[in-house]
Length: 310
Image 1 (tube, rainbow, N blue to C red):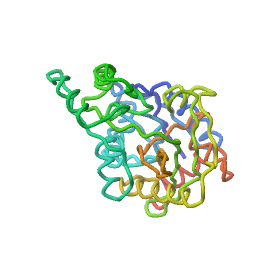
Image 2 (cartoon, rainbow, N blue to C red):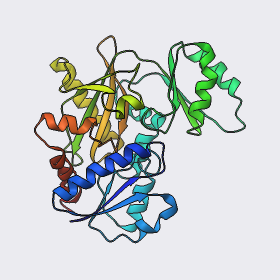
Image 3 (cartoon, helix red, strand yellow):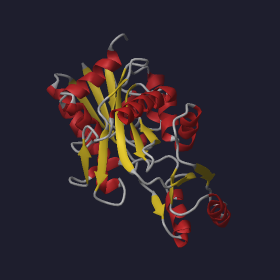
């Protein structure tokens, strides 16, 4: 097939996307496809508008990749692509909206509140409300951002204002969320809509305080244990809730669902990643390898799921 790979982009996750793109391009070529690679920028849309390909593989992360905008453009152009559509992508990227959907489906979430932030916003009002509704420690992060960019675990009162400003520098809405202490796990989901399966659960042991940008993307930044050393009933629950979250958001082909297992051994859902990292140190390929799928085979499965029956 003739496949275009969009990667790079202009978000804070550009470097990760460059690595993801390189991996996808190499795998597609190894699988015999003709590849057109595009380092995507909204300022060079003609590169996408003029595409004449069988399929687009989106290797972007963050804004203009994971938020549904590029998917909407490809839909208008009638170009098929790998992964979730515009609405599912936008919902998953909007953490506050996604949490509402999870809660409606009885998937346990951490207590949180979203606050719109503009140049006219009175930060002190937000701080006052946060102090009233949350007890230390808690998390402040942009509502729509990936790779824990702009995230602060607030442990002391004097950190609140700086944490809000940091999160607000990435987004016009910030999310304040109770801090859940526990084990970090993630569940890859793959399959046609209605036929999804969860791959082996991965436990993430970050070298830093939490699974931050360096832990995710620097070699040796975290340890991935596959399958996660947890009991069968909890494994089953994580897999079922991951598939349910994927389905209720309307995701397609693949996603990765992140959880924290709290001190009571209950899974608390964090988010659904519609375009999870596909770098050499990424989680999804690690899990696939556990059931015997090489990286190249995994990428080919995504292609087949995106084109069969169309």
